[in-house]
Amino acid sequence: MAWLAWDMTRSAFWVGMVAFCDLAPAVIFSPIAGAVADRVDRVRLTMLSQMAIAAQAGAIALLLAAEQLGIGLLLVLEVVGGIAASFSQPARQSLMPALVPRSDLPAAVACNSLCFNVARFVGPAIAGPLIATAGVVPAVALNCLAYIAATATMPLLRMDAAQRRGHAPGASLWAETLAGVRYAARHPGLGPILAFAAVASVLLRGVQEILPPFVERLFARGPDGLALLTASIGVGALASGLWVANRGRLGGAVALAVGAVAAQALATIGFVATGIFPVAMVCGALMGAAGSVHGISVQTLVQSASDPAMRGRVLSLWGMIVRACPACGALALGTSGDIFGLRLPTLLAMVLALLVAAWGVSRLPRMAAALEGPKDDAPSRR
Image (tube, one colour):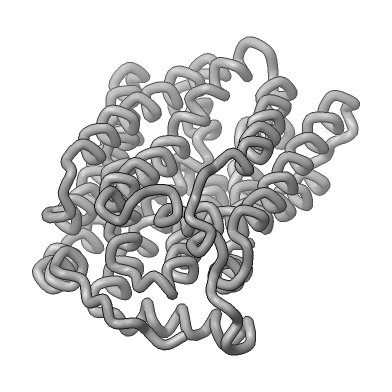
């Protein structure tokens, strides 16, 4: 979608706007979706939301093939897809305890985090070469088919029926949504780590959401350059993601989450400072590696520390962070990039990200004690 918007408009602002329309609906809908996931059949909710995403991708592919897709209609369809994804994420991830024995839950959470975070980088790495060789339509059509396949196989999952469905409604949907936000905000570990991840995501993720303008303006490359760069990011994300998932322990996850933000900021500084494309590819691999370590570490901590009755709602807040915060960063970076160029705003954002990492280091012992220590199994209020 980023390349399509760039190809249509040659404007970093519109590329940022497309990312914003896809990701920003999470601000409104993710907290509500978490409350819904905590009270309905999560398999059915996942299937419905994934089919909506498949329909959106199919519509884009058909309109593109018929040469009837303009930037305005693309923005509308991206909003539709963003709303559906906001409901899919907490419903799907809340199924984890229903799929494995309790003793295997930490490993399953790590594997799920690996898939979720690495896919954010590997997907574009697959799409890049496909766009370079066959155009945008096949890439979007394959995305549609992938969601259809994922939806069709959901009923094959074997799970504990009691874990498949959330709790019986004890209050209004709005009241339960607010209860989830209050629970996360008041938790001594969840509140700080989610706030840290949110600010870091705004500052760091914008570059990867609007990558095509960087490829063309900084390195004078086209789809081939985008393919190579996204592949580099994907390889870095996969390698580091496998390492984090294979650690097999929760201890040290907070330090990894904080340190990865500093590492990603430094790698991004190298990426925008160089004019040499092979160096940019190395920096891209480091960006992907650090982003994957951060995302997997935070998601594992959130899954492990959340009260089961609140898990869907807390995960929806994490979903809001990984979708809405990059949208804000992409829009701000795209807008400022058209005015000041891409390098200066990006460097300023990375300096701020390093300051955020320094704050995280100052809070590290407290967050680690609350998130990595023995969990209090006392039930929470709904």
